[in-house]
Each structure stands twice: as structure tokens, then as C-alpha cells.
Length: 256
Length: 251
Image 1 (tube, each protein chain N blue to C red):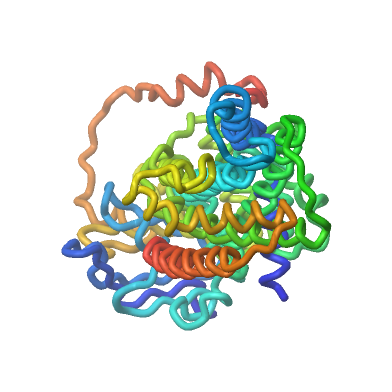
Image 2: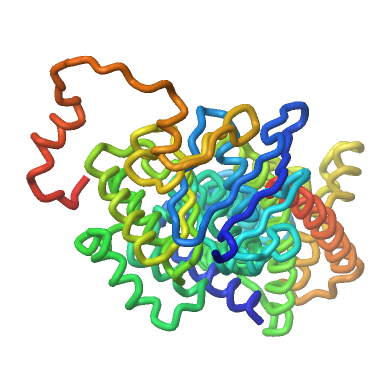
């Protein structure tokens, strides 16, 4: 078995008096999708910021693709890509210019080509030469994720990638994440919504009160609760299913 | 060399913002030009500033105000980057981190020099005349660029630490008012004692007097040395504070 893509050992971090991470251990296998689940303020973002070299931990060790985040941050940044909680896009530039900017910073040999390819892959080709300030929330998010894929990073961090998106846009982001993992990219995503973890992740880790309290596959997690009792009830469609049935059949329009 | 290339790419990015938000350029040059109009055509007749046209006397101080108003947009642009999350994206990428701030500094220099040129042209239309040769004009450009650099690093500080858009650009107000208590609008010898002492010993007077002498083709005397010392001092302090604020900001 190959070394894990992400290895976290005894990670601690505090903000002033507030202990946020109190000994986090986590391994993420190469090419897998791991969902980090936790309530608001559980420390998910703190953990992602440490993994992506934006924050220095107080104690513990983190390696990403075998590089220590504390001693070799540049090698880590070469291997990773971060999509933060707020769409990190330049609103005054166009979608195409945003992608070209990241491509040039990553020294991609063909910035224009990679920008066009990603624009059509994420359904943004029509909006390519519009300023991002005019995009809808879902379009911004898709552009944000597209920007993270330039340079083919082997590890992608997604911090609450679908927060604030409508169900359709959420499914589009999910499809993009799944395509990434199919291509061999390791994905660590944080989420507050259980069905997102259920839909996407190979493994689910629950961060609670500063520690990973559970880490396993969905089946393993389900085995932790007592065997269900059998009841016969009529399955009502959820509002989400109704919404998607009503609007989902039509092709998505580009305009906000 | 990657740091230079990264800085060039990021500077290209923020320079693109300027023609696309023309309001920033207009606001930057509008206030200095309004001051020019007000002082040349309304108040100037009552001010005795010597033999030369009042616009000629006035211009150096107006240029200082132009720089102060222009760098407030540097603070604004940096603040917006921090708000949006694109700052964190850059920091999680394999690029030279100092390039992120230097791109804002270079953008500020370019934008301010364009604004200064526009204000000089407006002053020419209002009667400003200079007998200075190319060397003196170069020296003027050098002093103003040096001042812009220092005030830009001063603007980086609120850009990094402000909690609101208003806060990010409010620091420029004292900078815009400082020229009023200097030799920029009236000769200092008309002011009462303590005010006169302050006016004669503050940086704007040193900068204004040396730029005025250069534009008039007169010897600059000790003013230029004092001006450069003030600017170097402001730059050193602002740079150290900005770097400290940057380190706190990125944790």
C-alpha cells in the first residue's frame, strides 16, 4: 500500500484562550475523497488552512504528498490547490482572465488553452468574457473550483464547496469533484451537510471538540449505531427531489 | 527570478482593474483639480504668494494631495483582495509571497504617476508655467515617485488591518489636510507663531518647497535634503509596520 497523500499526527492549534484543534490524527489515501464533517466552529477551516500552508500549527506534524507543511511549504503548495469558503475570484476580471491569471502564476505553457478547456468543462463558455462580478453564486463557485484545477494539483482541498448554492449548482460541483477523484486526484472536503458527505465521500471523518472522533466508510459509520428497527412508512419525496424534478429537466441557463 | 515574474503577472492583474473602474482615477484626479480651480479662480486673488502666477505657486502642494488621494485607493484595492479570499488563493499557490504586496505597490506607483500627469496638464491650462529643464523635471518626477512609494507603504498598513472599506481609505484624510498647514497654499510667514513653527517643520513644506524650487529653475538649497530625509524616514517606518501587519495577518 502506498503512503497516504495526507498524514496528520497530533495536530494542535489554539486561538488565544480557545483550543480549536486538540490532537487531530487523520490519514487520507491517495486518490480518495474524504469528507471532514463537523458543526460550525468545529475547526474544519482551521485544519484546512494548516494543510494548505496558510496557518502554522502550534504542535503536531502534517505531511502532504510526503512534504512537511512546516519545513517544505513551497513543495506542498506545488502539490495542492485550495478552494476556500468564499469564492476566491477576481470580480473585476472576466472568467477567462481569472483562469489565465492562475495558469500564468502556475507557469502553464498554454494559459489561454487551459482557460478555454476549463470554461467549457464547467459550463461557463458563454460567460467567458463577462466580468465575474456579474456571475451568479453558482457560476462563481464553478469558476472557483475550475481555477483550483489548473496545473493538475494532486491534492485538492475544498472548504464547504457547496455552501450557499442551490441544489442544481450543488450537483454540478459534486459532479466536478467526482470527476477529479476519478482522474486520481486526492480530495479533502469539509461540509456541514450530511448528505453531501454521503453522496461524495469514500471515507467520512467527524471532527468534534478538537479531535477526529470517527473515521471510516459510510457503512462503517452506519454500523456504529444500533441496528434499525423495521417500520413500514410511505416514502415522501423530499422538497429537494420535488425542486429538481420541477426545474432540473431543463438545461441550466448561463445567466444569473 | 520567479519572484520578479510573479510580481509582473500580479501587477498586470491589478493594473487591469484601473481602466475598468474609471471612478477610481476620476476621484483621484477630481479632488486635486477641484482644489486647483477653487484656489486659482476663487481664493487665489486674495492670496499674496509673490510675483509668479498663483497656479505656479500652488501646483506642488496640489501634487502632494494627488498622491495622498491616489494611495487611498491602494489601501482600498488591497482591502478588497483580503475580503474576497483571492489573497489566500495566492498564498496557497507556489508563488513568491512578497510578490502579492509588491504588485499592489507597483500598481499604486503607475496609477499615481498617471494621475499626477493629468493634474499637471490641468494646471498648465490654468496658467501654471515652469522654466525648468529636463533634468529638473526628472528630479521632480523622482521626488514625487519616492513620496508615492513611501505613502503607498503607509497605505498598505490600513489595507491590511482595516475592518471596513471606509476604514481602509480614511487614513488618507489627514494626508490630504496636511498640505493646508504647510507652505503649499500660502507662504508660512503669514501664520501665527506655533502654527508657523509646525508648518515649517513638517514634511509637506520640505517637499513642496523643493519641488517649487526645481520647477522654477532655482537652487533647491537644503530643502531637497530635508524632503528626501523625511520621505526616507516615512518609507522606513511604514515598510516595517506594513511587514509586521502582514505577518500578523497571514498567521
